[in-house]
Length: 199
Image 1 (cartoon, rainbow, N blue to C red):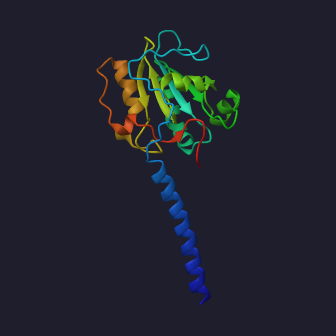
Image 2 (cartoon, rainbow, N blue to C red):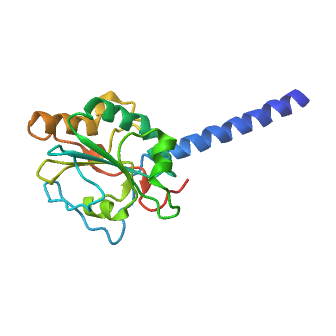
Image 3 (cartoon, one colour):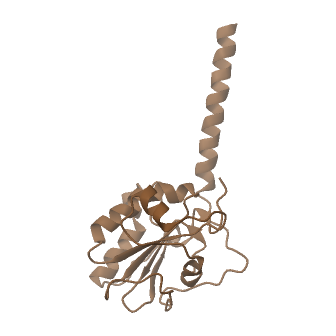
């Protein structure tokens, strides 16, 4: 009888863990709610940024919008760093930290995530680019127009090589080909709302 009760207890615990994992996976497959006061920015619109964030010379600028309290953002860091390593000589990269609940020092983020790019804490940059979710990728072309704003990948862990949207946008911009036609998974924000993260 004891073994049966122990087995049932372990089964219940395992079921609970699986349910929590499934719930979190399911929740992050839903689009991020659009804020009530959201002002959209269209692809091709000019982007005016503060002096805190600049591109090197005439390179395009890739901005990674990041919230350290957002699980999706944290899962995304290795993929972002792989893009920096691959395209860092052709594109300027920067990280914009967005979290209204806690103040992070740029040096703290650089050290913790081993980042070798500028890190800025400025929510006005998100508004200027029309970003209301993290993680989000924004590419601004050489003429300071919004070229891409969207997700990195369809997969929460950025492991689906068929849907590397941010990389596809970079390749398109650098090769000066026509912009790829992205589906809703690329352009609809998924992840954590800017300003807070429900865990």
